[in-house]
Image 1 (cartoon, rainbow, N blue to C red):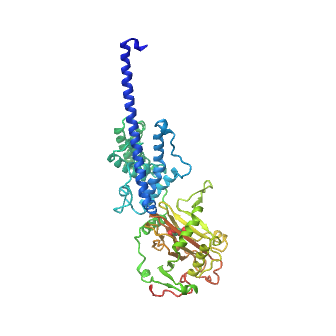
Image 2 (tube, rainbow, N blue to C red):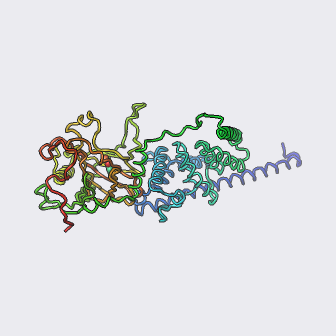
Length: 529
Ligand SMILES: O=C(O)CCC(=O)C(=O)O
Ligand SMILES: [Fe+2]
């Protein structure tokens, strides 16, 4: 009955004003929401156009691959949330289509780890990378504060606090430069930085960054609680140091160091990375003896179609055969392998379950000779090239390396006697590795004991013997596949076993290997004709 007195109606103006304020507030929020959605839409559109211009080149770039996964995981969640709080009309729109594939948070973590692997192996600068530059050259779309933040978060969740911190610093720098609304705040970045310092054992910096966090968000609940804790542990540390200086304590340093990996392991890592960067030259006394020539001998067929052979190393001999797989064959092999691809897995010694192998990031499939004439033809060619029997050879293994894909140093032969002879045909006597793609940057096959990098050349194949004539494994053949920095790396390989080689390559008691192509004395100093 408000209308009965003007005085009461006056109260309605208050209500009226409230509605104006509410609506104004609501519209402002909606506009902000829509402008964020529009910004996402524009970015998705722009990146999609860029990708469609040259798909392999776009996806062959790990930063583009990472941000694509990010747009389809965490960004999409934010978009969906934003739509959910919209009107009834928009509520019916879903981003969850069942007929397309979505990456998972595991993919995001994998892409993040791949980026740091590349960063560490190739000595890439975080700031350069985030600016989309590689060695000073434009490489990809610059990363946004949100990209860097999500990358940092993914690394933090994987307990890689050092790299998480580096990317959060980048996120902070960009956050301050950009004028964008994100689902996270400056204080979130500061908290990640502070806590990463703490987890890395640098309490002083943890404290300093927590103070910065409090300056931005004085009511931050965790920051307030952490400060006295940090102060206490700094004071304790100081006391301990002072006592130590006065010689009062013979106590062990309290902080446990990470288990030191073996000296060999560290040295090998260094060699591996330098080789991946292409910084190591083969010693002059070997390189001066290396030749290129035509191989015509191993099989009568080669008289008609000689194979171009390039020696890469002597004793152990490592050779490259050029143009030994055609573009058509490559396409057939890829087409057959694709639907069967499986990720490389290992048995987790703790749980016994099959888990993805961290040392080998790739997908592979096996193709049998009987499946297609192309596969049988490739096997025959391997026999012509090597002069070896295919009787006990394994099926053709096809491998594709994904974002930052790699295979850490290993031997192709089995070291345990029971494993070497478990398989029919004995140990893996030789490896033939076909390169089915060029790789724009990275992705070399490197021999860590020899100091040799072989950069993939499409249609070529690398060949080496894994065993000494005595049948013992040759430890000099240790090798690895470097992370792919740009592009997609496709290889296929044939592993030849001892069985069937008895007359072609008789074993003897010698440890020293003879020339790889047994029938031919080497080296024949003849270059390409
Ligand atoms: O992909 C490469 O370059 C090497 C692969 C390799 O060593 C293997 O599959 O055993
Ligand atoms: Fe290998």
